[in-house]
Image (tube, rainbow, N blue to C red; front, side, top):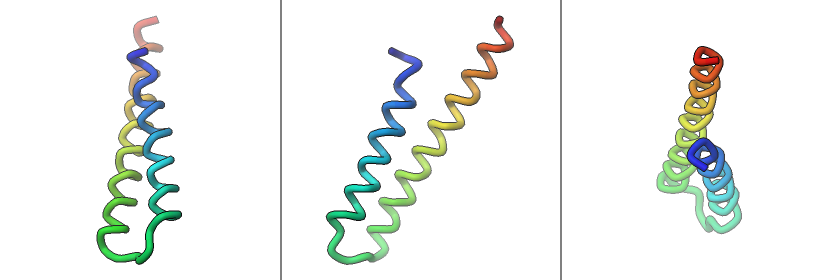
Amino acid sequence: MKKNIPLIVIIASSILIIGNFITSEKIDGGFWLRIISSALIILSMILTIRERKKQNKKNN
């Protein structure tokens, strides 16, 4: 379960980004800050997954 948490966060952030596009009435600074923050969370989780894979290869 612990190794699946970054993937779950990526999926949840993607759903939130899509929800922001669908439900947003006006595109202002707050809208873009929400999108950027979700994108940065996705990027950090991707980097976390890649780093874990590298460490697993080193340990094996």
